[in-house]
Image 1 (cartoon, rainbow, N blue to C red):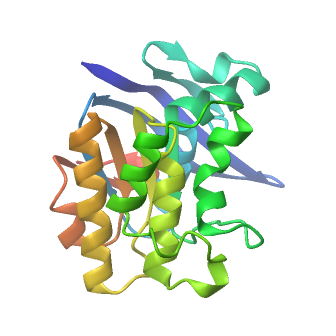
Image 2 (cartoon, rainbow, N blue to C red):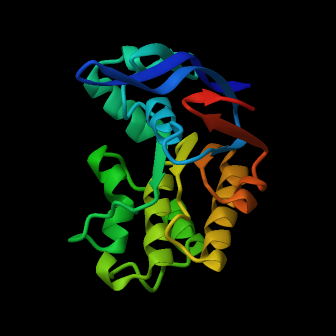
Length: 221
């Protein structure tokens, strides 16, 4: 069943009289539970595409449908709520709040949404992330791999149906990178989540159900 659909999606940046097409008329469909890797050289438009699919960036033209909803037709407030409840974002640089503990960083989306905490799910998530003895630590006291596990926990805490991940292993060593990808795959299977991951690593991309290659803002295969 189709969960994400991009229709004639484009993003153009203008500098004076110069136009740069970061994303150029992309059409894309992703099914429920599918794990998709997006690869391509730096500057090919991968991150811009991901940000538009997740409603973080607005397209210059085209549409993005999630479960049949035209997300960019939503008001800013409704889109913010939609993202918080339906999409989990994971970034290369973790983006943790430095003054919050690991536990507080993970719980932040639930608290912002005013939702009741599912204690059973939360405890199982902490255990799956192997963070039980690090929950009271600030990000500055955590290793890179631990910080990324916290970022993944923050993305998963709302039980999103979609995970969008932008180079989640870009700053990690090989062993930790494998652990992170394995964790995402386990979560995707367990909760039937749709996952789109940007990566430069061909070994990581090879673990996906499907690989999409982007060049100059277009899908070339």
